[in-house]
Length: 104
Image: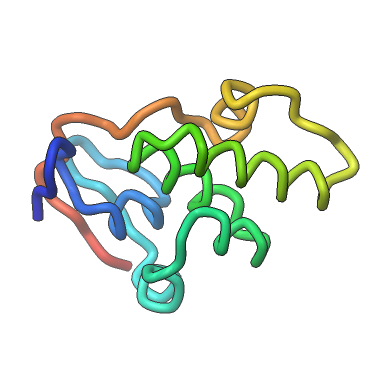
């Protein structure tokens, strides 16, 4: 389950809908359907939360900037910065200490 410097895999992080202790709760269907897409591809499909999570997971300011541009082109309310974009989806980093993943 662990992947690189993070405590759980990219696909699981992108489609996490919540946490229960050290367990990530992951949307199985959405993960299966969209797991191979990049952050900007997810954003172009309107899946902004996993798009932002992808940039965070990859530690890629460029990817986040592309997601921000797609978001601002498609939203009536513009987001000014990458920090504001992260705040919008409710996270600034990959949680540490995730030991299990539960798929629902």
